[in-house]
Length: 243
Length: 303
Image 1: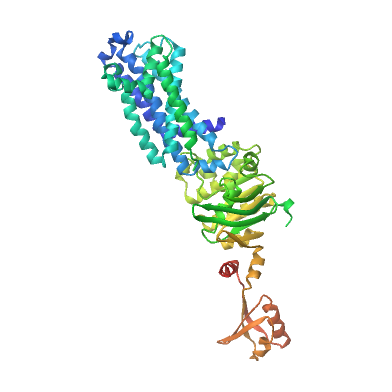
Image 2: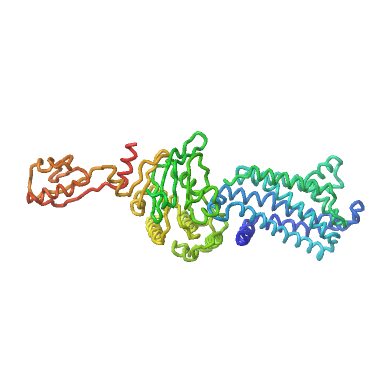
């Protein structure tokens, strides 16, 4: 299993989608935002966090969403299309382990990214680290579980690699919008804010904010994220095809 | 056929895709250590049959045993003992040749030395090449290497040498003979007659989802009952009746100084004996032997 994880991680890095769009691009975005003077202002409604500090978890979600919604379905649907999974069916390893190895590989890249983003935000731009590390970790794990499950569902339902990537991309932008990438959630009109709270990344943003403010993620975002994770995992298991 | 000794036993296999019957009724018994060929036209059900044996297709009816195991239920036992080279199975584009071999060898409890395998298939110069950059022939050789890297007791090779140039084809045949010499049973799906004739101990001829016949390559040729043809220039003229009275001779013709005799398998011995008795020398004697290809066409046509 460990050699599979190593190989899949190498392959994910060689595919370049994860490292470039999932890690380098949000990192550059983080650095740009860190240099905008307006970003240093504190937001009263957000427990004294600066605008930049509100953006740090959004950047983290940018990374996870890119890996889970685009890189993962692209790779797995490609494996299915090219007979990679079928070939593995004839070996003692079996295709399920490759799927697991892909998940672990993307998870590993995401862990490296989150550590990197927090380190840069903290050391270079003097951003606060989350007050509650356990709560922050819980929020990250929930967001990652929900997004990977959605990514697996995309893989299960899309007939081919091209369509899997398209579906992932089409879902990606509204989800990032609802996470507050362009308009802060607090500035959204009430209806949009409700939609945001119900969306995976909007719920994620709330969970992260709770952790930044020293608490654990509230029951509402936790339940929403868990629901996405459970329902999408179950659906993808139900409809997954190896060929 | 002794059922106890068979390594692969297929009984009344039936598989359809929608309305299309891919395999109608196939029964096979494959013996340990033999090279068993599966020969037949496109769409005859060859690939579906071996895919069911490998456990990656679910038969609609029939029973399959691989070393006494059910290929669908006993995945661990069957995948360990069976090396498979599929027509369609591929690898990730970015995977390098050496990485693929090392990875696949890690799947098996007692793998072959993958570096040795890479060398014997002429892939060492390509060890660092990515799968997407390989030529068709190189991909094919890698696929063969991956089928053998687990030290299987049985290897299923589907269209073994398709896409290989003649030299690589002959090298691959030698490799397969070497593998068999180590006691590995080989199931070879092919449509190359030369390959089947050279490698196979027995051949199952499959057409329209059914087994037409199972025999040795020589047996198939004989079974097809194709005439042998003899051409020679007699040292002196003779009466045709000398030959036409022989039961093995069907027809005698004269073509510009040459005599052409068509007849059954024994025609050569019968004709040469009569000529010798009559002090006639057969100059420039040529025997045109029926090939497996002739037998194949003839047996399928008889269907």
